[in-house]
Amino acid sequence: MKKLVILISFIFFSQSNFAQQNLNDLLAAGVNDAKRFSEGYLLPATNGLAYGISSGWFNNAKTPKKYGFELSIIGNTSFIKDENKSFNLNVSDYENIRFPDNSPSKNVATALGHNDPEVTVLVTYQDPIFGNQEVELTLPTGIGSSNVNLIPTAFLQGSFTLFEGTQIKGRFFPKVETEDVKIGLYGIGVQQEFTTWLPEDSNFPLAISGLVSYTHLDANYDFTNTEVVDGENQQVQTNVNSLLFQLIAGTNFKVLNFYGAVGYLSATSETDLLGTYRVSDGILFSEEIVDPFSVDSKANGVTATLGANVKAGFFGINASYTLADFDTASLGINFMF
Image (cartoon, rainbow, N blue to C red):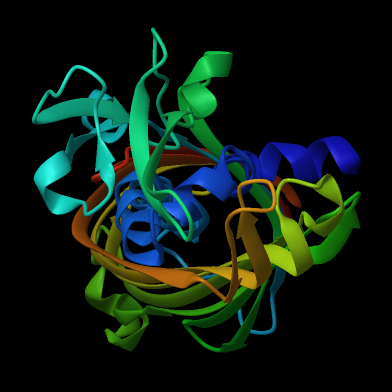
């Protein structure tokens, strides 16, 4: 279970790494500069996570028989594109950060990328005795430093056909705590097969369905005891919420079926740096900051999915690929009762 939690929380760990790496210096530059940097650094990761947790909701356009139950184990893998691995840090957007060589801007790593070689900046802070002082800071890198180019997610999903053609779905990953990390996921969806409304003798060759689904992920990393910065109750908290609308069409055979869908994803995420932080330079500079900042993100886009499903009795397996801002491959193992 611990390995699975670590796998699912790759991106969240990247966000917590940002909180740990040189947090003292970033906050010394001022809350505004720390927040501005974190927006460019974190947003591609939280947007990618939103696409990952929202995929794999269906394995067929045909709904099971009335009162039918289906249990699935689903794994998704979202692929990281090059444009999501870096962002442009323009020093004119910052109050107290500049590059040592006085470059006006540079591309630096997001939580999905990697700085190779390392990128340093000079952070200016106000000392109460000596006035403006500078400290050199190595910018944080991301999961690209471990040659990771994908965002994995996994969960259990169940569905129940409450009415003819109407399938109620739920997905769940239990709130699990390992070391200082807590992460959990849940979601609910409704799939309605429109072709069940046709006369029985219509002989329509395809099954057509609509799906609406909501998914929520929350994660928390407590780094109070890491001694990065003096203070209390220091933690990174992330919440991701997504709403997905899809129109699905598929074949209607007994064993092998193919399906496709077009959809629209609307997702929001919020990452909060919480707790009390005392930023200091020895005994000369000390400032207490409480709940420094929050970073909000929105992800919206069209999705297109192609997949196939094989059934043998009560057992089935499906695979699909979704084209979107973050392309996602899904694999599901399904048990029908």
